[in-house]
Structures are given as structure tokens and as C-alpha cells.
Image (cartoon, rainbow, N blue to C red; front, side):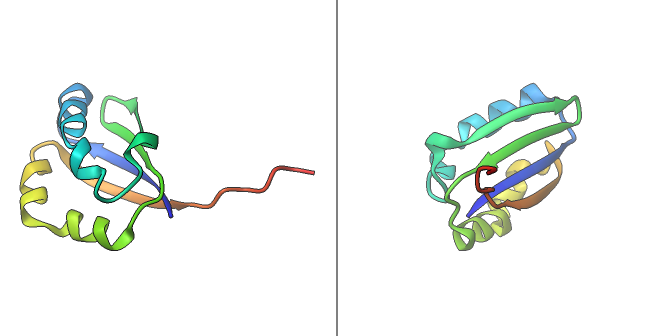
Length: 90
């Protein structure tokens, strides 16, 4: 499954982005990290798109107290959405 996450930030995007990039090995355990997309929407919001996500592994990671402690100073909320590819028109 493909997931899009809106990340509401407490910190600057640049500080959060470094934290995000430093966790590439961790993300590779839950998704196809080679296809991961990340972008700045505005000063308080980041956008993350993950592909081929193992939902059970993602749920465990997001619920892990160590992960929560790591992101708590930087992230107000993770708002996840599932993505369903559309067939080409016509």
C-alpha cells in the first residue's frame, strides 16, 4: 500500500528534514525507501509519500516509545492517508 503523510511540524522544516533523512535505514524496514518522496509544503508542514508500505511494521514503528520520543520535539502530528493509483484516462 502507498501512504501519504502530512507532517505538522513544531520545528523548522530544515531541522525536521535532517532527522527524517537520518532515519532512511529505519524507513527501509517498512517501505521501498528508494521511492520515498519528501517535500516542504510550508514552514509548519512537510509532505511524505511512502510506497509499498508494510502497514503492520509502520504501525509498530509509529507506536514505538523510542520513535515517539525521537520525533516529539519536532512533530506535532502525523496525518496519514492511503493512496490508490488511478487508471489512465480513456
